[in-house]
Image: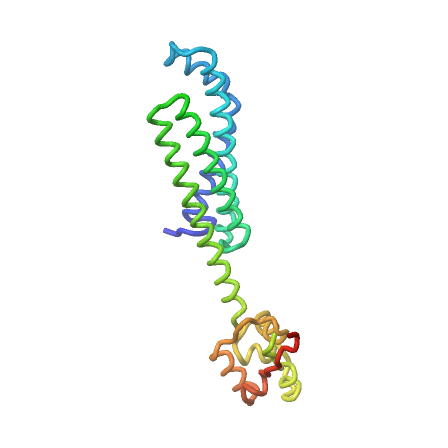
Length: 154
Length: 71
């Protein structure tokens, strides 16, 4: 199986990311209705505040998530062209790290006000994604430097 | 840069063009221009060997050290 390339695994992942982008957009647009349905079905005791909190919380984290998917798509595009070691990708990793850490921060706020197990799990996941992206971004920066050196060795 | 590549001088002496040298050394023309225009950061011994063989010269004929006088 081909891993890298338009017709390989990375090409497939790129299409999955496209699909995910679309799904996130749909979810974000229908959020006011779905949150209302969710609260009416599963939560009975909490007041009006919870609806607005959940709506804003999910909207903001959804937007941040969309940013992460957008950066990932850009990186997979360059990967499909077999040019992954570029300065643009280093910048993408840094932006992903910042976005993911913001998601973690927002989940931390929710943990303070409305704690739930799933919130903790997703918050921890976002935190580790952010930290990993920060580190892989630095590794990529060093790789770009090595590649430039190698390209200019005749 | 303190090390200067004088490839064009040697090529003129041997009356050899860049593309002809590229074929003899088995190097891409783009890479050879990088070398000729002093843009290269390093040169492999194997490349140097091939160029010396093609131009029938010594490495000193191609490379020159010029001290930086900026200080």
